[in-house]
Length: 513
Image 1 (cartoon, helix red, strand yellow):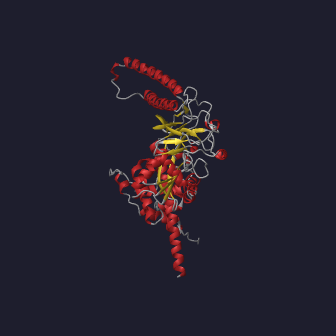
Image 2 (cartoon, helix red, strand yellow):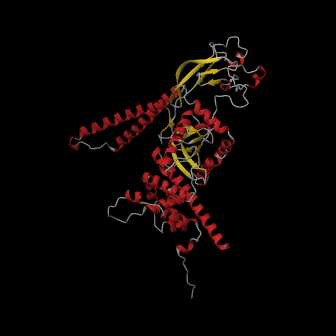
Image 3 (cartoon, rainbow, N blue to C red):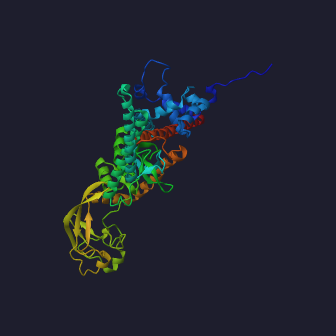
């Protein structure tokens, strides 16, 4: 007689300490009522698979580096951990694909719930957070971009084709009088119209981008904007690997305690600065309070952001250049109306053009005027508007009337200056100086040195471990949802590992007691 086959159960194939078991516990602790409310119950066919199983498979797939819907379908059929997690349900790739984009609002709630769980365990404290952005390729070939001129030519060609097809259709209708009036465009004509509308939208975006370039001082005739034609919401930006391609700028705000992501977003812009203040507001909405300290890099250190953070009551840390003289600068003196000694002139800071830096000029707030290194007063001459990062600010211009014959004029004045040295002051000067003073302290420098560890580690894991170097979906809203799946998975993984460490420590303590 042959030996009897013993088929192990699925439960016995998953070890007691396997992370997938803790993963399931976390999913069971989630309130799925928002997801269930979006399910349509028709009463026909097989009962719908509960969203808990599909969401768990997507999140666990990201944990295991599986992003595509077809690979998730395969994993649910052949991998024991996936089969155990979804309780042996067969979920096809179409279900996964539709599910990813359907539940934007419930996914936001899931992100918040996972964050709250971590906060209740002391893993998120919001003492300091680090905000940063990265570059992720859009689902658009770098060669599928066009300028306004080429798009206009394409649109004219499509208009002509549409008219030709319409004329053919009218001639055919004339031959068949009893054909009746069609309720929709014929397929061939409908495809041309759809393509024409797509090109028209891209053309409008290209024209708007050219106008923006013109305002920034770039000649769009010589250097026109390139607009992606496959994913029109993306933007042509410099690639990390070199060259240019359609990209998005995902952001993440990471808590300094254990590295949990407390906010995320995706911007169709090169610079992530516009996302800094909204990130703080969303953190307060999700966690009930604002972070105490906000760390970011030099790309997000505009005076406007500094002022808004101060108004929100959040300590802001980013490299900031103060316009006032600092320690070691000879211009910093008790009586600014007295000249800097000639022996100290070589120590006066120089700017990019080799001329005396703005920090050589001391501002007197009481008199609203500057003093130059020679002690001459520079009163307010005028105000003028200035464009900075899409915002119009009012600049105050202070001018020195005593430059003629000044021994420092060669080091102070540019060759183009005809009416004396000027110094400008914008509305954010004071908040910029307060930020610079904060960054200059020992505690400020020590805290800011933690920023790369907190912020950049997050992107390293999302890109290298989860493989998120290019988005699978198209369109800003869908891309934002795809990024939210990844950041939620990131937090679930951290939570699972933290719970595993706590239980291991508890077992070790129990064994030694």
